[in-house]
Length: 271
Length: 330
Image (tube, rainbow over all chains, first blue to last red; front, side):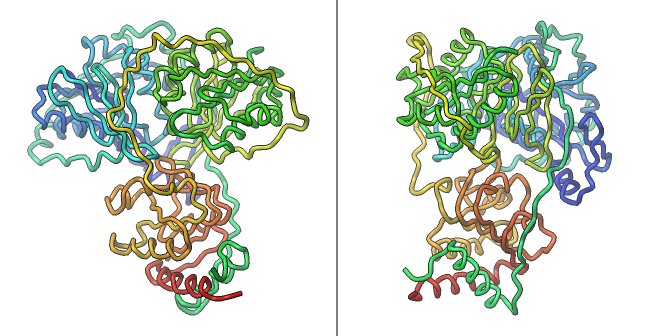
């Protein structure tokens, strides 16, 4: 069976957050963050989606794991995917003009069709740049597959069997099953992705991931027209009216704070 | 644009907090006024008892109820089918959801089926010329992105909790109520629940007092200090994402954009830096108290009271001080 994983390269969200907090984030008129000092890396949730695919492979399932990504210069990220254990990788050169989740989904749907379909599509629950998390849903609609979100674990008893997914819900874990083909998104609860070994890294370094262009894919009508465009991006301002409690040592600080909480009826004196 | 604004709420297996539905109705009303179009409330699943009253308060013109028993299962296929059929017959300009665990799954599916534009994690929707601009949280809430929706197709928006303060309309309306006949007998749910989630004990979402711990605790063992203070305060213990990711604490206690959205009266954050992705889950707290050894931690910009000190030294003293106050008599 063929397991397809979609991976997105994102700006390191921790670095963006650090710049945002320090007031030094640079955003251009089109809403793009332009700082070249912010590292680009594979979206962490997508790395966990690859991990989910590799765990299925490790369980003895006969499968090919293919990692696809839309973007320019995806070589480093796709080599990383190979070093983790992906069987195949492919980069899709983005079209000219702005891309939104509709455009991304249309391209991915066309690519899946061009390779003869997929049995299981795994994606991260959301990309840690825009946090939208809608591409998996749009792809599932485009491919006519059911969608299962927020997987903590993805298991398959055997080829041709339904896939069993434990979902992280606000009420605790929920176990569901779905017949393939299906789209499943992976949450951080899946756990740490593996680290590549040195020989795997060395081997991956020799591979030049194939690059497709959007023109080579039969993208559906209107599929390259974005439904939303980014008008601008900014860092929100905070009000900030914090009273810093002063006191000699932890005991006095605690007493002072508790006195204020009692004063404001946030905690009650006496029971 | 003449198509109305449709606020869609779903009473599935998990309750949508009424204040979030009212927040969506409040925003929906402002957009419908800006566009000069009607405001429709599409209630999917069993209609809340006070639905007509709430709708009138918010200036809703029409209430449309789809109450097929299949919609009470919380499964996606029936919901998406029902909503898409309704919107196929009654095209909308803006379809507004309040973002919950369940709508985070179905709103993009509805958008995909309708070929609509879609924005999740929205904080605001504004009318700009003849189109809509949607402001959404990005980078875990560290930035805001303003999306301009293409005209000529509907726009599906999921409104993040705590982003809009519910406000009644200046003058109430007398909404009509219609039951929408939708035959879902042919809908086959493709995802089957083998073992449903069972909420165990009290929920963070309902807690009045929350004590949350983060990396500043230094080690998993110190999390017990958070639990002790929560117990002394009669509240619940929670955690920020880093220590959940590190496996100190189960993700059911995680507060934030990818965890629980809470709204307690008192939120005490110990050893939490205050990354926006965390603050999304607690910014609706009436009072935030921060204990952190870093005076520059962003958490102090959200907090009402702050203590700049090692939380491992302060927490035991807080337990003592709270216990003393609780045991004292007025």
